[in-house]
Length: 359
Image 1 (cartoon, rainbow, N blue to C red):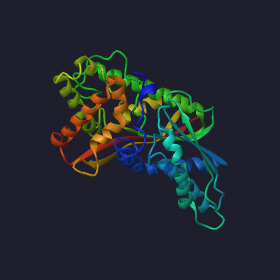
Image 2 (cartoon, rainbow, N blue to C red):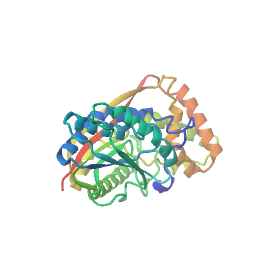
Image 3 (tube, rainbow, N blue to C red):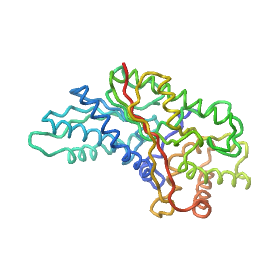
Image 4 (spheres, one colour):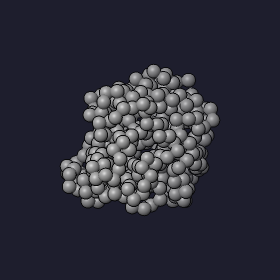
């Protein structure tokens, strides 16, 4: 599967859209604000550029698209106001795959600028910061910006997605992702794909950042090396595994077709992230930690089926190619969530790393 050609979050603002079902990701962004604020403040104090160029990689669409960027701009503007300095201009690049719903992103720009104006006004002689926004389509596993053109890179809930499903993986014991019951060779293949992808990501961002440029990266992860996926991710994906098995048993899907479907994602632990960063060599690590938060699976206000559908539906359509069959899959997922999955609080784990470019 060539992920860059088929993968995207569900666009628009419908019931199964990412815009309506991204509360989990929003929680992750808000929890990392302190680390992000510290990194962008350190960047500004060391460089004091007249224009700060920021790239948000994997911006998707919906209310989260501008959440992190707005926080960065507000932090720098407040830093300038507290020191009596004029705020720099901001050039923001919103990046995602070409299949992303950029139309929705662009339609939300007026609201973003209005929100920025409301949040950053106040104080005689201090105008709201000037911010210029551009959309940049392309995989962040390629070069996407000119050399030494960026000051700050932000990526939230994106880097656990791989550039491809690992090559030559064997039967996954009825699973569709790397889990503890997968064959050791499959777990090894997933990790090696993640290592290659993350190392390439670091190399290209090193080319694009100025000396001393900063990155803050957050990805779905796990606390240690003992488990291959975190509890929250398994909770979301397990009903899909069961639904596909049920459809095989009913004769609606060929077993071989299900066995050849694997999610192109890997949840790293901090030790793996550190190893790859140190080995690639372009960055120093300022912060590396895991953050945990809960979602209440019994909360009727949060629809786990729609949250799952928002990110996995395009992959299913690409692989199985039958819209009616996909509807059956999610109908079964809904029944499984309601009747079979445990209720209560589910733990989600993210790995966050704050980096500074060396040279």
